[in-house]
Image 1: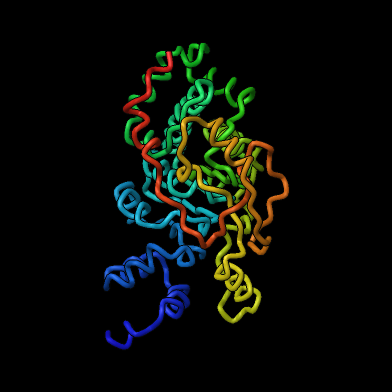
Image 2 (image 1 turned 45 degrees about the vertical axis):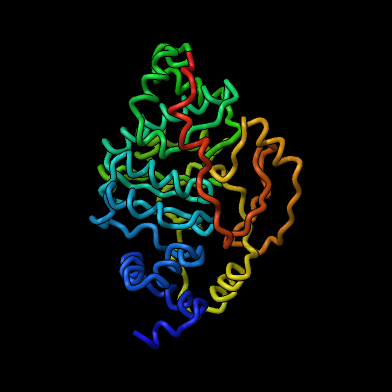
Length: 333
């Protein structure tokens, strides 16, 4: 173990590129140095790690204990959640930690799980709309996962924003309302498939009401229409890394290590009295960084944050305003 401890962080980071998720977690338990590197260095998480397909150990409990240890950054660009034993709660915890950075999400789950996820995302979206209307700080996926009953009751008390039912509210909300501070600020590809339809034509999934509703909700939470991708081909952000011998992959890794991949300022790292104030502060600040990252985003809407933080730069933890909001804010009625 002594020679191993003598290795520099840079060498250890290069070695970690060849490890899978569970190997990294085991390595983090060896000593404090390795634990610090695994959970604090964004470069560790730039590969195809999240999550292994059909891994029965990726449960809601595992997610709640694991994802919060990873430093917030823009390293994770794609999430693959295929046939995992997760409920809607597990997905919400994953979104809470990675929504700000991902540009591609892939989900394959049972019809019942997709139905529950769509139901809770609808209530979450309704609460975001209410808070924006009252110029209040938005809730997070994590807050909703912890107190979903409270947020459901709050939305119901408004008669679903005057639309009598969650279904009619969601339909109107998705077509007429736009978030100023969307949680999926970089999302461009959202792929969803139902396990019951795995052996049928891909078009069946797009006719599935739960899948279609999830696509619409993803667009609402991204602040713009999202491409209706099918699972026949993987988006670039979800493709497995090339072999170490390929020079193109080494060049890409070099750009990431040098901090030339750009990202947007994390929504949980900003605190302030209102969304309007935070947006004005963002518009009054100027940032510059080279476009050396994996993706370039030319079609940003006017209300999106400037792309300022490098992918290798950790994001500060959530502000107290987010964690305490559901205990201090008045009713929306």
